[in-house]
Amino acid sequence: MTDASPTAPRLRSRAWFDDPTNADMTALYLERYMNFGLGLEELQSGKPIIGIAQTGSDLSPCNRHHIVLADRLRDGIREAGGIAIEFPVHPIQETGKRPTAGLDRNLAYLGLVELLFGYPLDGVVLTIGCDKTTPACLMAAATVNIPAIALSVGPMLNGWHKGERTGSGTIVWKAREMLAAGEIDYKGFIKLVASSAPSTGYCNTMGTATTMNSLAEALGMSLPGSAAIPAPYRDRQECAYKTGLQIVEMVHADRKPSDVMTRSAFVNAIRVNSAIGGSTNAPIHLNAIARHLNVDLDIEDWQEHGRDVPLLVNLQPAGEYLGEDYYRAGGVPAVVAQLMGQGLIEDALTVNGRTMAENCADAVIEDERVIRRFDDPIKPAAGFSVLRGNLFDSAVMKLSVINDEFRQRYLSDPADPNAFEGPVIVFDGPEDYHHRIDDPDLGATDRTLLIMRGAGPIGYPGAAEVVNMRAPLHLLQAGVHALPCIGDGRQSGTSGSPSILNASPEAAAGGGLALLRTGDRVRIDLNTGEANVLLSDAELAQRRADLDAQGGYDYPASQTPWQEMQRAVVGQLGTGAVLEPAVEYQRLAQTRG
Ligand code: FES
Ligand code: MG
Image 1 (cartoon, rainbow, N blue to C red):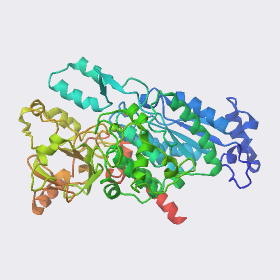
Image 2 (image 1 turned 60 degrees about the horizontal axis):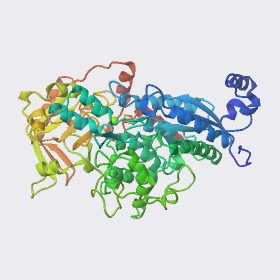
Image 3 (image 1 turned 90 degrees about the horizontal axis):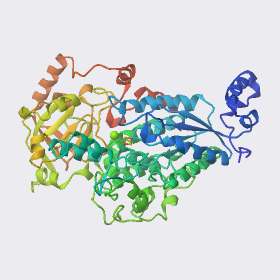
Image 4 (image 1 turned 180 degrees about the vertical axis):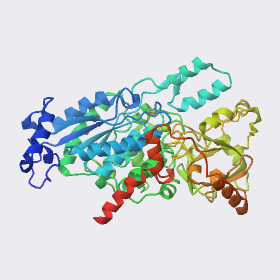
């Protein structure tokens, strides 16, 4: 199959490889791509050149299996009549990068945009997986808007320890508590945590990776049924082959990201996110992708379309199971089919040229312990509440992880079962929290709210995943497992902590959290969506004036050039934490037409 059809658009790679009006440059482009064995005839045959945006490397273990999958991708691309060109994407390893992998999403995005725009590529396969690799790739594809398909690397196999499933990340919170309580030692701690990672692939819990790979499928950007396939399964290899076939067809059909990732697709993804119990990082990343497409989507859409959707997928941290179980139970299509039954899936095209509804119409749940029916959910209303008040303009709270212990301790006032109030302890950044959390003079009780500030995209470049703080040791020993946390940073998708996070604007950008002091009382009302410190306007104004006189909220200096550059131009978590000039120039370009 070549672009022989008379109606097919001329492939963009022809401007590099076959332009008789610019023989000088054409010859220069050709000779160097021929130097490793591609023939002149091949390069001038009119076959689409398909990029494989390779995110796997030794530095990025979660995505490393893509190096293997690339062989099957190439088979598919070649079989369908395309020519594969593989190239590296700036690695982003969630668990390897200091100070935080969050810093690298926008850097990988920028780099990939330049590659997709500046080289002879007619279409691209985005090899997604570990948390930020998915949004970075989709944001770049959105910006350049050439035909693109995402291939997930897939989750690791289930982890096991003493007959129980151990899930990525989630086991850390439990192991931390066991270590703090003296039930295991340092070596036992590491062994327990490592048991959750028995194979190649990404986190096997419903953390940010499984969330974002599921949402890439829900957006229509990967083949139906592909997100949940565990990395080592043979089905994953077959999926790579089919993805290779599909991208060549997409180039011939000129099916672009803007045709697939419409507002309807994002609304579908928001609903799927609630049903799967998706990560609180999802609003940041999806809003960022939407902004690079000029699709109208904001944080309020998450509450409006997502909050009341029930939790159907029983995966850790909100539930019991792990990635292999999710796949066997039917994965994303089974979830979508349940939402379709309620009229909750809008008409949206997917990479294979069919709609989401057409792809998922026949999908069934194979195991109702893992994926529940819509009329028999694990929890009702499992999406995010979007909160606001005098502490911030927006912050999100994941309702699906509010557990019974928390409900009884905080939300048991029969007069107002959805509101809670307590004194706060304020930490300035993760180091401050680590130093002081077990300080006997901290003064935390089982009614305390923990505040983490200085952890947003400016205060802690990239925004730290630190809002989910554990309770002090003496409370853990007394059986209090979690205190509510509020912060301007992010939270790991694998955490089950009842936190209010992504507070925007952050303290470092003048947000109200900068005015808080330990001992202030904060009231959260889930009925009205308000979060307020109980102080008079006059007191807040005085504190604001004092802070301004000191030159604003203080935060540590940048450690690298990129930290400094990103700090100058990054937006807040509530609007996707994008590089604002990258969105602005696109908006202007579209206005100019
Ligand atoms: Fe890479 Fe979780 S650390 S997916
Ligand atoms: Mg994470």
